[in-house]
Image (cartoon, rainbow, N blue to C red):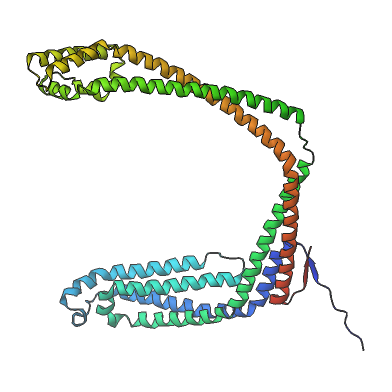
Length: 407
């Protein structure tokens, strides 16, 4: 007795797996797909009947039945009828357009998409019936065609869903294997990239002499930056101290200034200088006006025109402000700020040089460490890819009865 020699597994490249899987699934799902396509004409016929029912309602010029909806709703039903029919027509047009769209890699997936289109159409029609309830009730005698055709559509969709569900388990298996193939392809692409990087790293050699020079430059720059930061911090402290002294001088006259502004007929108020003091007092013209206002306020207090709690103390403090040389202090502050800005600019430039040096150091560290890291990652990817291939081969055998060997 002669026995047929068993065939070995079919060898196939990983890049050809998806097409092979699709061909297998198309073949296995053929009976379900064929049955579903035989049901679709019933649904389409029901939709045609439904469209004719819409046309019939559109052309009907009679009134709705008052005894069913009441006199108050008659006009509402008549007004809403064209909106109801237009909504139904738009639902059908949308369903036809969506049904013609290409979706998925297989015929079964396209039928799954058709199912969602049909379900959506039924849901929209039912929702519209609820929205236009007065039309549905008032014209119920004219809606026999609607009821029959809608029932025909529902039964057709029910049969369609029942037939399609027979292939759902097979489709889940197909999707699972398809995702596994996509994962394996991603691993293969990453492995190729890592292998290329590892090959390039073999030609990279660290330069010890260059690294010593870079470290020396970094130490020098770090020392300069530290000194500049100390100077910048000192200048900030001096600037804040000078501003604080000016603020303390001017805060003492704020109450008298409000009384002066209240009595004054001048357009420019003393409070303007207090609220925006630095911008206005740095200007020579503004500072001159400020001193004049101080003098006027002092005279007003002296004459009793401006009432304050301790007139003599207030006058003494105004004299102190006039003689304090705020303008000169602000010029000194401006000079300190300019110096600080220049120093901060130097710090920024040196910090940029430090970053450049750190990049050079990183390149050297990468040269030393990347080979080991890349080699480790390559080995990990090779193992993952090997396991992924074994899993896919097992899926083809368990789900589809196909023995394959992935190259």
